[in-house]
Image (tube, rainbow, N blue to C red):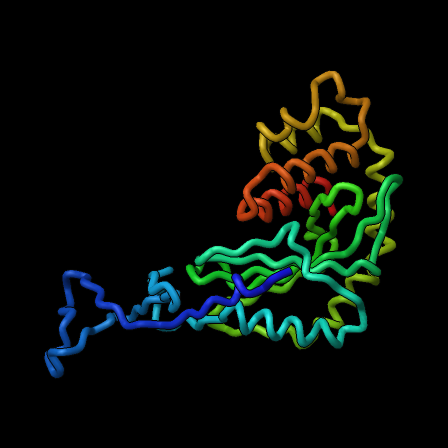
Length: 255
């Protein structure tokens, strides 16, 4: 996967903010502006303003984040690939999926490889986020395992580190028996009215209606419904919307 589009240059520039109380001109030096505690994050190669942030905001660039991540992955002891299926980048945000093909579980139809999802933003919509999920081989359904596996989150004002990535992979692997048991259980449980109500309220009513017919209640398994939901999210939704819906599926199905 070509990572060059993720690594566009960004810079910080002084901005003038008129709060109608303080002057925006520095009276001691009339050629300069007073930023009033704010700065602009600018895409340097296009000169496009991405966001206006407080001076305390510390940029974590996509390029630095990816460089540190790849360095850690190279020494983590597991094979990996940069997975384009649930990765995306815009001026404001990015999501990168790393898949570990040798670390896998399975259901009755498919292997399910462990994945890690890395998020970053330049518009304060989120800090650096790192969490585990999976990719189902038979249909490239993306899943998030937010309930079972540990998460990592860093606000830009506090910095970040992936120095313990190997430990996190080991921790994730130690939970595989629990996750496998949960998958096996979902393959046995049938969809009932309560689950359908939870899907409608906590994920999407429209998505619930698209993924299961009323006459299927009590007949199809919860795992089949989960895979219908994750298939729709993975293949029908815009990439920047996928994470939120995947996390909600994780909560509803306790994965």
